Structure formats: structure tokens, C-alpha cells
Length: 141
Image (tube, rainbow, N blue to C red):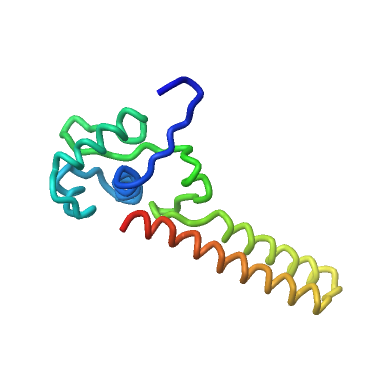
């Protein structure tokens, strides 16, 4: 890979990476083969070798693999909480709505239009964030 060129992992390799990333433990080739539903362990090994060359997985002394956190553009819209991917949009919109509501309550100036707009905006962004979360589920299936 040329210096300065970022590699975007897609397809089967991305699915394997996501399984490792969201797993609570390192996994072996056969375990990954079963989870990802591939017919051949050599296919899993091929993708693991690719991921390893990109610096996205590391092989442990016992032969199992674990994911290395990445700055992959597709993953940059998520943060991971207990190995579960959560779109960054969700906590941002909830925090914004909580701030506006707290501000209005603290200063006694509750504007119903602003309140409704804030809640509607937060609900919309959460809805869109959950749609984005389904991208990972779709890619990993």
C-alpha cells in the first residue's frame, strides 16, 4: 500500500473485521468461518491475512485473531460502547435536546415551539442514526 493512501475494507473482509471488533474475545479461523458462514477456512484465512496486512487485526500467539481499532471512514461515524457500534448522531442529538430543554427550564422561558422543534429534531436524528446502525448489521450479515 502506498504511503498516505488509506485502505477502505469492504465485503467479506469487512464482515470478518466487524465480527472481531464486536466480539468480546479473540476468535480462531474456524469460529470466524462459522459466524460469517463461509464454506472454507482458507477463505477466512485469506481475508484475515489481508486485514493483518492493513493493520486491522493481529494474530495472537495461540493462533486466534483480534481486531485493532481503525480510522476506516465507514467506522468513523460510530463509537463503540461495550463492543457495540453506536452511531455518533444519537448521543449528539440527545445531548443537544437535553441542553435546550434544561436551558429553557432553568431560565423559566419555555417556548413551546422551540421545545417541540427540539424534540422533533432529536427524534428525527435518532431515527436516522438507527438507520445508519443497520448498515453495519447489513454488512455483517
